[in-house]
Length: 246
Image (tube, rainbow, N blue to C red; front, side, top):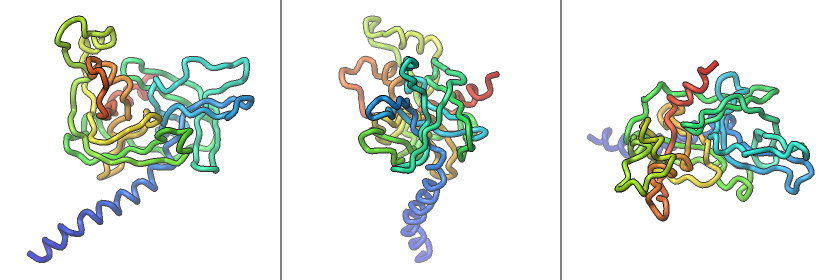
């Protein structure tokens, strides 16, 4: 009885230690996504978060994070920023492919491969499961220091729900209702700049989703005057499908 009570008391400390070790392993694979233009002040503009997969030269992020266009006349480039604090390296990136329906994008960079994150098997996220995500909230304000938030998968829910009347339906929601799919609803707080962050299981560090509120809130919460503070993630199965395209 005493041993069981001792183990129960020590379990939160062990879990915290495991997460601390996990964050050390996750952070080198997490990058900032933005643009670089040397004649601009400041030259770097941070737009969101991404993470390395595959061969270490493939970067995943949300499609909406990417700039609509680049000022090529002034040599503005799509850029992946690695490292943290003052030890930041900028690598020119190119778009490999995009999945607009699920708001995902795959980029490529050159140079030394980055550490990569392992993807979980499709549809293995469970409601109530402990998760964490690491990214760059408020990027240019807080600087490039990866920040980790924790929570749980609170629900696996349709991306769009029927409106009370047709006047509440947007074009995006109508498309989502025609081809419904589910997203991960998280009991965790995300901020601007976190878009594209890897959502991973605390138990093994495998990625179960890609943080995204812009796409989901535009469909699921379109009838709310003030969208909720709920965070969402695109399930990893859609990332796998994007990576397998030829």
